[in-house]
Length: 113
Image (cartoon, rainbow, N blue to C red; front, side):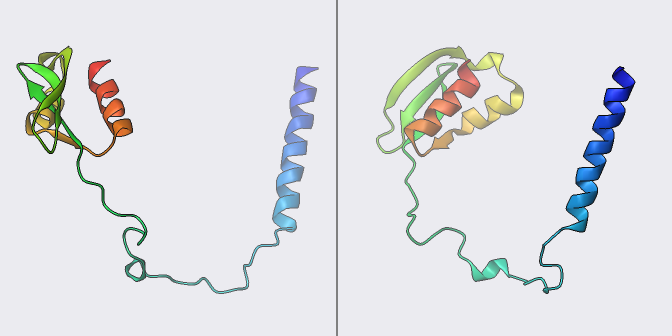
């Protein structure tokens, strides 16, 4: 019974695939338009580049958040940097620049959870 059901399902899937190939109404006859990426700016004109708001770094062997403009430590976590992999510690020792509150939450979740 199970083999019969699998056979019927396979035939149905094959039939649908074959029908899709036969009735493909794509634009196969039209040439492909080539577009250079240089023609488009890397960022939309309406979007302005945001300034860095925070820097996530190591302070007193723990992960901390610094205000990028004032240099003031605004949050110090309980997470010791020593538990992180060497590559992450290297990034944090240089400081990870963050542009928004949402991005800050994501970075802190990555390193402190």
